[in-house]
Length: 177
Image (cartoon, rainbow, N blue to C red):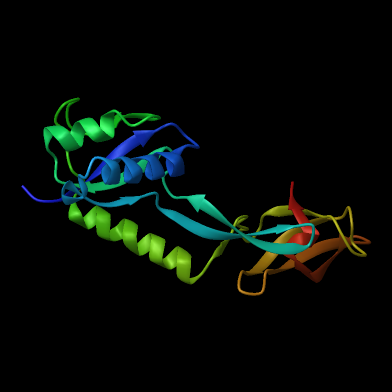
């Protein structure tokens, strides 16, 4: 039948430990010929904490691990008996359905884009209401006019003495209301 991709449901928050446990079990039981990649698709996101930019990982599919494998009774039992695995997604309990190759390609593309260009953790929309937290306009309400994710800056409109005043702020100087 050949190697196909399957989706394995794992306890949320334990995807990486399931990935590690599966890889160790495959090596220990000498079943590498039945398995390809074991993936937890993630993207890097830029987070601003205390005015500092940090890169963190965000899972595309929390609670799921993607396994490339040749589905046999032995490989099925290896995956099913791994701690923190609840089972396969799709098909029946004993005969899981592989995911289409097109879906796998799309997922791999998403992962690659996340590696090449980290996205900010918080996304802003034009017209959204925010509160300024730092600087001379602290505690003022603001409305988003333009977002520059490359520079982590926003152009907002702040009401001062009854007039809308444009202000350029960093992501770290505002919070969502």
